[in-house]
Length: 136
Image 1 (cartoon, one colour):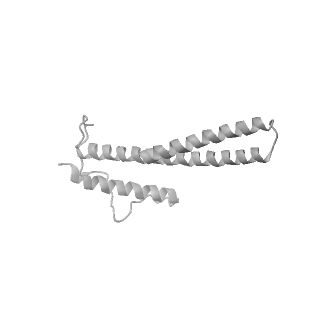
Image 2 (cartoon, one colour; image 1 turned 30 degrees about the vertical axis):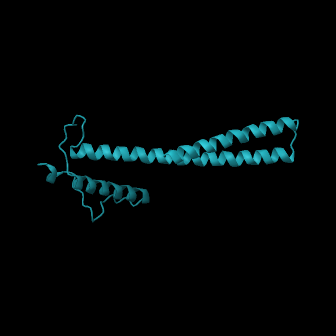
Image 3 (tube, helix red, strand yellow; image 1 turned 90 degrees about the vertical axis):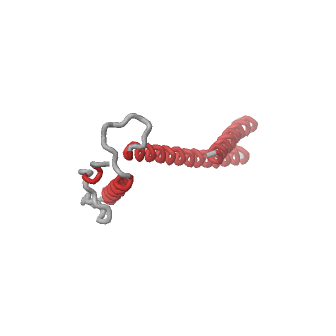
């Protein structure tokens, strides 16, 4: 995480410096288009793109952490290991939760591919009744 923050900070500092350079170059050339203003603008464009990439990487990292935390909370809640008050639903086994998760992933893939069949993958049969988790 520190590397991502450092990369984002460095890209931001370089972007701001390039913006300042554009303003200085424009000011010293009496707002005329010159080779130095073109060079400054090109550098500014490159720094803007680099900063955008650093922002995208930071956003991807944050999203992956959010998903990981959400998954851990879901597993804790579903298996009854949560320290928070229960939702009133009976806990299910982690194996069953994984089977359901795989079935949902296959459904999402099928929907994204436009197959429209919406049937679970044969290796992960899905039974929404949770019959084997009733006593756990």
